[in-house]
Image (cartoon, chains in turn cyan, red):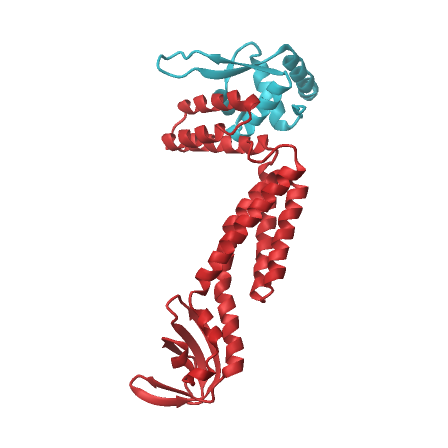
Amino acid sequence: MPREPNTSPQTQNVLQTLLEQPQTWQHGYELSKRTNLKSGTLYPILARLEASGFLESTWLEPSTPGKPPRHAYRLTSDGTNFALQLTKPQQLITLKTSQA
Amino acid sequence: MKAIARALLRWIVNYYPKPQLEIGRGMLTELEELHGWEALKWAFGGFEFYLELKGASMTKNILSISSVVILAILASWLYAQHQLYLSIGILVLGVIVAALSQPKSAFWCALTLAVILPVTHLTQAYVFSSNMFHELRANIMPNSVHMVLNSEEIHLTPTYLTLSSINSTSKFQVTGAFNSGKQNIALEFLNPQQLWNIQPENLDKSLILFENQPVKLALFGLPTAFLLAALTLFLRSRFTKSSPLAM
């Protein structure tokens, strides 16, 4: 049974990063660099999000010939909504702080 | 480094459950973007992911292994006190409790035991031998020791003798105090007869146990460790739906 995605700071970090470009396929290594998460932390989060239907994945053909296809991820519509729900309160707090 | 990382990651990804196999392969292809230590760290992430998939986080695993280490120390101490059955009993009980309360990490506990036990037995062999020595001293303490030291024939009355070390070739290094006034004298004897200068009929046959004791105990320790590992696996398969080997 897939685990419900938790709202740990690491998961929120991944969701926020994916939400910056919701339509773009993003590779694991890039995500690792952008979120500053180690592969051992990032991939379990990606697996949980995918199992929950918040993330979809595909194999992308390499830009350079001779290299293997790369696995890439992006948010589904459910995932986008979930990420927005999670990040909204933070955005509001940020907005209020900046207004003050 | 990258080749090692690739081999390690490829190996562990093979054990991923089917639903996560693709994501694991994705992790493997990303490795091509990394070099050196970064690649190795990425590969170790694959192991962390595997542990996560098996439901045993690193913290839980470390805690389980620490518990087993403490358990092994306790069992070793009991073993040193000649409480052999109590020592084994505690280890078996520990593995049963680990298997019932934390079945997924019990497998790792058993593997740890399989490594710790032979080492423990090898270490304890010396303590065991040392204890035996003290027992024998109490039984057959001679009134005087006749020996040749630095080409000088001397008679000594030992007030105490302490065994410092034993090695596999039956050489006994002894530190003791003697009535000659020499303190903390270190002597090396080739065999127990030379040490005590006693009549052969007084020699306790159990003295022979000094020889090859570590080897004997290691031979005892290894099967015990594997027996415990097998017991843990059995309990795990008995009390959980999936077998630990069906990774």
